[in-house]
Amino acid sequence: MSFLTPSPADEARRSALRRMRLIATGLLVLAAVIFVATLPFEDASVLGYVNTAAEAAMVGALADWFAVTAIFRHPLGLPIPHTALVKKRKDEIGRNLEEFVDDNFLTEEIARDRLAHAQIGMRLGVWLDDAEHRQVALREMARVARVGLQRIDEKEVRTFLTDVVLPRLAEEPASPIVGDFLAGIVEDKAHRGLIDIGVMELHDWLAQNPDAFVAVLEERAPTWTPKWVDDRVITWTYQQALGWLEAIHDDPEHPAKNAIDDLLRTLASDLQQDPTVMERAEALKERVLTHPQVGETAESLWVSIRASLLRSIDDPSSLAWQRGDGWLTELSEKLRTDEEFRGGLESRLGDVVAFFVNTYGAELAQVISHTVERWDVDEASERIELFVGRDLQFIRINGTIVGALAGLLIHTLAQLVLQLT
Image 1 (cartoon, helix red, strand yellow):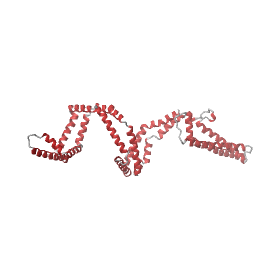
Image 2: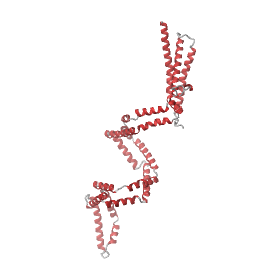
Image 3: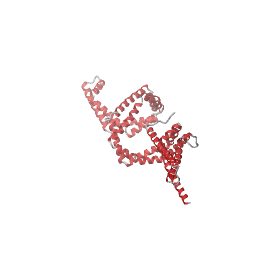
Image 4: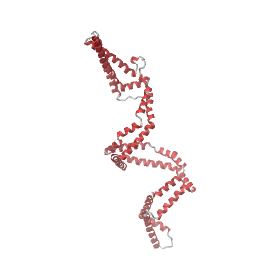
């Protein structure tokens, strides 16, 4: 089975390799032709020098042809020892490459150094300063969000809640946690905003529906009282109710608010300490979580939320896009002008990269050896030669030229020695 997928650039590499092979082989053939043509001439003649240079060029070319060929296959198909090295040592080469990458690339020091030189924070800030670039970033985030939302099926959400989340919540005691949470809310007075909203909503409803208020009190008025008395009492009560609600809203220390605070404090304490209240709270929680309607409600809620989110991310004029553009603009400003913020971001990014390198670097490097082991030996040898073979042909060319020059130099020195003697 082949695990190496040819790429469109392979044909160009193959053509370049054939061209360099022809050049290197052509030089060998040229040297052979010159050698044969200059054989009859004496060593001391000019053509004798040429003959010697051609002879040495052939020797250099043949030696380097053998060396280059032996890397990938047996020269002339002969099983000569220490040839076809890639085929014989493919797995060992993969392990050595894995070790080399692990020791020299996947290290915390190198990762942090490269991040520091990259200046990611400043470059990101400058890039986001352009409105078109922010739109590109938002479109990519929207695309990823859309794919993620569409892949989450509502049935899976319901199954996850009903089979995993809700049973687990039903088993865990929640009243102490709720009590502690409620105590913190009361202590911080975070609930006062909700009280004010509720009070004003009730005030506005009463102000807009006085007839409903009057109708309720008239039904409960005694039958023996005169109508004019009822009307005055009801009108006074209505005005008092409106004023009381306004007073609750406007006075942070209104007795009604303090009474609500005391009630919530007592409830928070009982949820953490009173066994009876705790038992009732747990029973109520279990009834709610095990109700069949909970799963259906969660599914419907998710469908509505997902549809709303999809509409927002698909509309560049939506509030979500406007806020996203504003956030990215603020991020760009901070990255470009706030050196402390930028340094902190790059430092945390370095910590993340260092964690992954230290934790998973060795496993990432193992991908190299595991991949090489799965390769077919013949196919691996051919593909490796395809990538580096063109450059290796320069060894043959250089061998031919250097051999010729070396042979010429040696022949010249030999002739000088003979003349001196």
